[in-house]
Image 1 (spheres, rainbow, N blue to C red):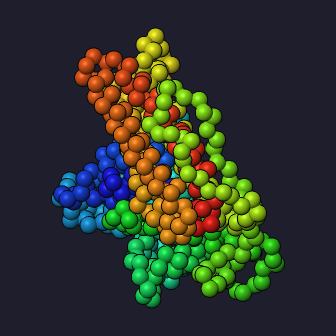
Image 2 (tube, helix red, strand yellow; image 1 turned 180 degrees about the horizontal axis):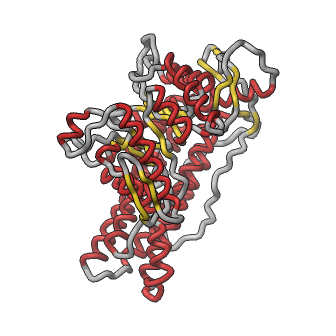
Image 3 (tube, helix red, strand yellow; image 1 turned 45 degrees about the vertical axis):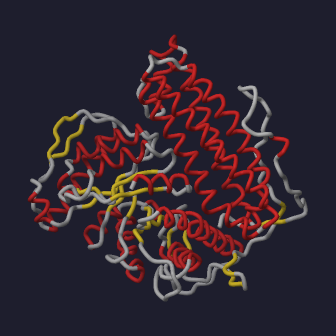
Amino acid sequence: MLELSEAADVAGLDLVTIQDHPYQARHLDAWTLLSVIAARTTSISVAPNVANLPLRPPVVLARSVATLDLLSGGRAELGLGTGAFWDAIVAAGGPRRTPGQSVGALEEAIAVIRAVWSGRGSVRVDGEHYRVTGLHPGPAPAHDVELWLGAYKPRMLRVTGRLADGWLPSQGYADPPALRKLNATIDQAAVAAGRAPAAVRRLYNINGTYGSGPGFLRGGPRDWAQQLAELTLDEGMSTYIVGVSTVAEVERFAGEVAPATRELVDAERERRASRPSTDDGAEPLRDAGGRSDPGRRQVAVETASGWEPRSSARPLVVRPTPDDGNRFTGTLSWDEDSRPTLSRDPQSRYTAEQQASAQHLVDIHDGLRGELARLRDIVEQVHDGAVEANRARNLINQLTMRQNHWTLGAYCAQYCRIVTGHHTLEDRSVFPHLRRKEPALTRVLDRLQHEHEIIHDVLEQVDRALVSMVSEGGDTTPLDRAVDLLTDTLLSHLAYEERELIEPLARHGLG
């Protein structure tokens, strides 16, 4: 699970969720696992899918969510359910509730959770299932945590429309043909409560296999993208959570399905915005930005090479981040002047989807550069003992760490995992794809892979310096040297990789 979560984070996905069945002996505790996932990732959000309310007292649940949100820098959300498998819940010491009691308890719990998060006044909820009298609220989460409900029956759907920030059904319990009717119930309840239907995010737990068979999510990645784009445009679904069991599945969903889905949706919305819509009798439907989409229509043009959006090409606007040439150390582990390079064609033009493939590399690298700067600052603050008790402590706490050498080491190790994961993804997936598409890139790709191996050795030096710092009295000098070498090596490599690969990635995509 940790490996899959780290792969999702490196691949640029948005969300990792796990089930919550506290009575299941084979399952790790959901909140402990979510906390470790958040600590070992940097960008991805985490959430239970969904929290088991009968075994999670709402005050404790609210504070658990807020705490994780604070420690992760605003990356926690809350999926919440009424509970199921009542014999198992009772065996674990929880209550047995009827369907009506379950919905009533959920409404009371939502009131408690939101009051705890508010940080204002005192929490007072005098309910049948939960009574909270004069509790001091807090901690407040780092951001406005969204509360998503797993709901299927009419009363729960109405609660979702009135009170929730999102609806989280699962394929198998609510297959695509059922979504329109269920969505309509949520919309009606939202309007009756004075809310816009678009205020309720529509998430969807999905599963499928990649192949060539008929049916929902049974074809290739382009078939998946077409079907998910149709659900987005026709039913207002906007967040897809796919069940995975291998890193390859994570990378395929992130590298092929997700970007193609976004591109198809954007292209169709752009087309609709540029043409007067016709009334085909379909209900207006929501999108993630609160706009309405009329009815079912084809979302892309089918060509001999597959589905392509209706968008115009333009010169490449993505620019590599330059290397300023400044170095902390005297020499690098490679000769920069001997690097192979390819000429560029300034007249080439690229669609928005192609530009996005190139920009994705720069965005990932910018994230690595930002994390490297934070790492250097942490090492500097720890090295300068004069500010440890004040400014350094505040800085390190903002990075979800406590001020001591072991957690500094944990942060450094986490950064090293991120760099290694990014390079592994390139070596196993992106580079072979580019080799097949453009053989002239072979010498450049060989050099980049060689530099990956050298960077791996530098990361090992950082790890050894951390061990030495902790075990031999806290001397940061070896760590300073190792981090300086990592900085020089990595910034040089990232600039070279962007310079050589931006245009090929625009031409051929990520694979």
